[in-house]
Length: 269
Image 1: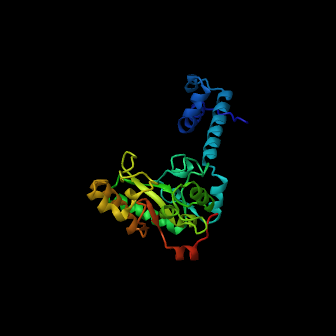
Image 2: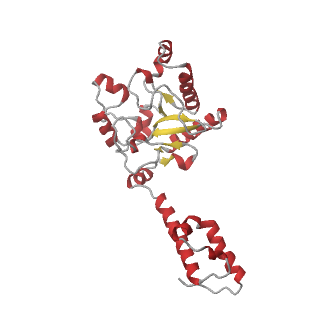
Image 3: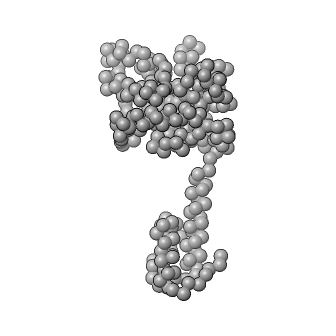
């Protein structure tokens, strides 16, 4: 690297200080650069170390921003990362972890939530309505677009009688609105990042998760009025933004119906 001579020592001092303060605090610590860097005895070698460190840190940042091959495929197909539209929405893709009913990571290094562009805009709108009422609350996304291949794994893993299984999961041959990027699974977190109590966990397979039975369940003492209020808050902001909920999962919302999804979107295989 070519180093240009700077006649004014003060200029050289501030030049180096700028790089240190703006870019290199962590990198300098890793390289254990002597504190004498802040005096007037700055050498060419020191400047080279600093500039190399800046370059290393920039490369690390770029590496972190790289997306998986499958995510690039989703982008190429026209889907959008919800974080690109609203960075305040929290994303916790459960199928990219082992914290799901299958106890396995089926998304791998794919960690972002993707939806059709107009669907994503509805989600941003729902976040807006939520924060109008509760400025410190945020939506948290558990699942968005879901490839048909993952739907197949879920179908094979869910060990329930056929009649019960179809209440919670669409057969892979039929598909789900998730497969089009037109459905989302979500909840709400408070100002501390804690999920509101909805009475069950996400992907709970049983009547306690049924919106249609909430009043009955409350009378039986199985869920509380506060839990129902939290669910109603979620439904209120989602419906206001143009979403519809289903009867057996408090967390699942559709942006369009099946007919419109088939007309407007392609399935993600």
